[in-house]
Image (cartoon, rainbow, N blue to C red; front, side, top):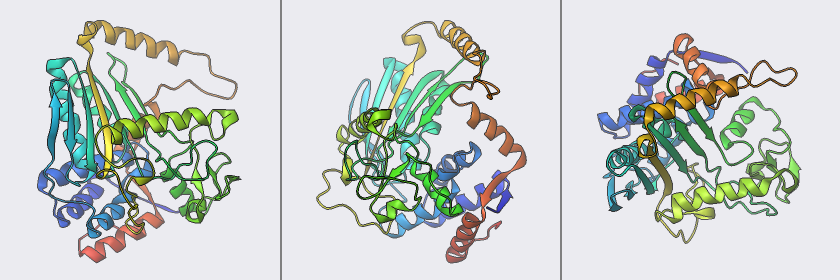
Amino acid sequence: MKEQVFTYEQLYEFTRNVFKHIGCSDAHADTATAVLLSADLRGIDSHGIARLIGYVRLWEAGRINARPDIRIIHESPSTAVIDGDAGLGLVVAPYAMQVAIEKARTAGTCWISVSNSNHFGIAGIHAMMALEAEMIGIAMTNASALVAPTFSVERMLGTNPIAVAIPAGTEPPFVADMATTTAANGKLELLQRKDAAAPLGWVQDRDGQPSTDANILKQAGALLPLGSDRDHGSHKGYALGSIVDIFSAVLSGASYGPWAPPFPAYVPMPDNMPGKGLGHFFGVMRIDAFRPAADFKDHMDNWIRRFRAAKPAAGQERVLIPGDPEREMEQERSSNGIPLAESVVTELRGLAGKLQLSHPF
């Protein structure tokens, strides 16, 4: 698949102009752009600028409010529920995480559930906000119903990611960011652009049979929970995805399960939705609410070094710590640019023409 390489600055300017065009304030355009492009920098291409046109289509369909009044609608000293006012999840999520951080400064920990939001990009970037405050961050969200529970052919859950960011001392932080499915839908979309087959265990067809067709979701197929099938532990992925759905949406008053709003703007909204928009869930823990921060970070350094020193299996160069691949990719792409697939470049060029914006494509 052909690719073109662009600097972060080129993509930032264009993306910010798109968000400004749909009505975002300067501050919200900056936040949304930084969150969206963090995915490209960190090598999670499925959730970066390739999704920009999807956000614009949601705005055109009246499902995204570019000028949201994001507000706390219920709270205690260590909890809150936030209404995102149908804003970009790329903006709503950082707002919620900042509330969590500020509450944790006083309470020691804080938990935030969010309703009436939209797709928030990669979960990891929100969890990582806590690192700057020397806190542990947790982020999760429900998503479009594309996943069949174990033993089902019906799509009931989203890919429902979980991210946890933990600071260390001299070592880089531990950052786990994962879908609760065998593979995120974005990875399936990348295979579609390449006209490539999906690995066995990623998806099933409408009858619940294993499939390698990357386009199977368009034929009423489904993504599979982490584990792929019952014998390999798919009930565990199903349970994890359910926990994310309940914490993010049932707890906040967002729409859950098969009623979660679909990301593609052309897909009709579900009937009889029980809540408002997508839901997110965030947690922040102040380390010194548990033990002296310096002691904890010393032990995290020791933990990381010992795991790095674990003997690799035959044919493997080293043992990785969660967050290593993304951090190394960010360093590489910050220096050498961000590659975009030709199909993505073509879409962005078309978007620029439609909005009459200057572009680097």
